Length: 485
Image (cartoon, rainbow, N blue to C red; front, side):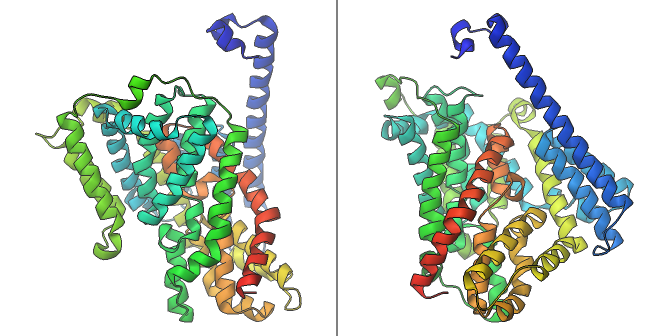
């Protein structure tokens, strides 16, 4: 029974319920503190007794990475403060050069987030978000399951139309927020969290099965062609990966959201569904701006302009005098600056790990102990897939092909598999994030929406477990049917 709904005031909860919630809160705080202390202890122990396999510089990087990731995972400090702590410690102890540590602030991802934040504020301020949400709601109205399924399906469809995952998330997240509000899902409710997760995960994770739709895919394509003269075509890549990594994963994402975040939409009046009324001047300007940005995002293979600069140009246009959809007050009060610091910290940490060589060292050590056997292709398949998944924890997802591709020829010799097949095994790894911090689009979407990163983390971990125990064997059978194994 939800006593909060009965009373409308948490201070008026019945004594038994109040005591239970208090005990649960204390237990969560205690677990968080223990997790942070354990992480800190491990980092100090690593510095005090560095392993022989790591160089001194790599040991310092590993200790700082362990501490930072541990604090992000436990939430002992607000995420942006943990990022600032990472910057401070990296500079005080000269763990890496300033250009590496602060490289996140020069990354396109940070400026894409900034543009997305401005665009999101504009969408909500002008009322365009509510208007689009009303139109979408008229098609999704009926049940919570239909809403979640429809949003995941829309995200997958958008992945075919728009190559940039971060662009998709920036464009769709404010609309998802409006849809959540339209169905009565308040901030902090399970329904709102479910709607946001359906939009973000649906437009990102299944897209690993679509060649140009995510950054790691394109990194793999480029390195495979450069190092091994292996050309990956759109159609063959789609047939190989999309049935399992795309369609089946999308269905599992829907099921997990419905399981973890069940809710029921509020009763929306029919008049609200149509949202009648004249389109305002600001809505028209914003609509045309979004239409132009979408067109530029969809055709980036022609003009090669980063989605970040397109979003930034759109944000600046919306703030220009004479347009002024976003004024000084909205700019100062509505932009979530903490999210920029948080993402810059994640990107700086990833750059530091890659620049130090720690990711490559860990990957090589991991491969050296794998049970690779030419006589057991399924065991080799699982080993390489899991190794690339674990490598992504240290390097983040875009770093996996950069680390694994140079090792593919050696793995091919050890397993007796073609280099082309070994290259494709990476996709199984970098399409399975264990933690949200590995995937910038997930972080961007959760920060734009104001939802907790831990909610996305829960889905990621369970989805990874299902992938390892169910989808990897299923994918193995599919590859055998296609003649890749």
